[in-house]
Length: 322
Figure 1 (cartoon, rainbow, N blue to C red):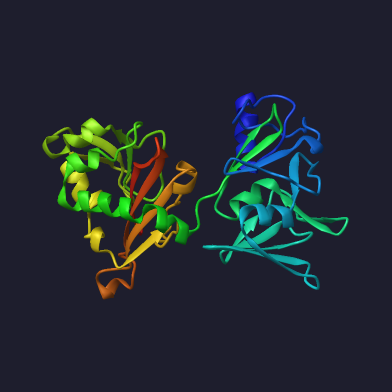
Figure 2 (cartoon, rainbow, N blue to C red; figure 1 turned 180 degrees about the vertical axis):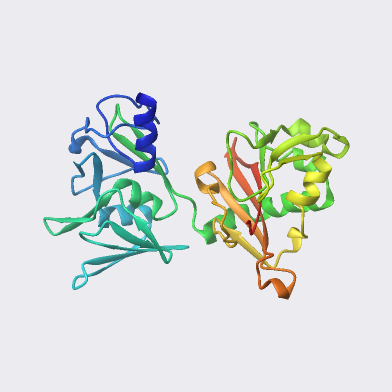
């Protein structure tokens, strides 16, 4: 029963709880922590809220203006429409007081709870405040602390990772497995054949396995083919040709830093799978004009900081899926 409750909470969003959910766990729907005890950190820095957060129907509500400032987002308010607009590249969000719907990057998003106005201030659900700007939230029910991790904006991410990413994509192009192995995270590198990252099933290879990739004849099951559901049973070399370097990504015309370029009908959950990462996307918008861009392809590299260096933790291939 507890597992079912926990699963429901994951679907409904961030809540605060009397029972269950240790540090980093998923709490249930009843409030355990007084609103005055809610602590918010953004990328490890405690945010000083001048206006007190509160709990309504199991949801933590936070002041929009202070959250926007803490996240480095620009905020404007249309009093007539009772609508706030937030901008933090590459995201643009509009949220209206009293509405359970918001607009994020042109799409409709359902909120855990409607935005509210109290004492002349707009309050929004804590979880949405982070996710609207591309961040993630973990909740520690024992301390009443919400830890928000926000990715760097594209310009900052590029300044940090461009050289490292270029080394990695060139190593992939040249099949220089020795060079690539020196960049692999201590937990290994996860391979995802499509845009959805399956942290439970995707193959993870260690740096030593990458170093030996050139002679690796092991047939592995890398996932399932889109459309048929048949298992992807390939050697590393075969997988490389189809699901890693399927195009000359080192010479891709578009590169996105913490910015998604290729959009298809496969769920792109890379940010949730790698919340602390810088994601670099190499993108071709298509190859044959007759397909009108439906044959686009992307290669995404996920870099996670370890020991002062950005190490390669994920290699994600993406394309239009059926």
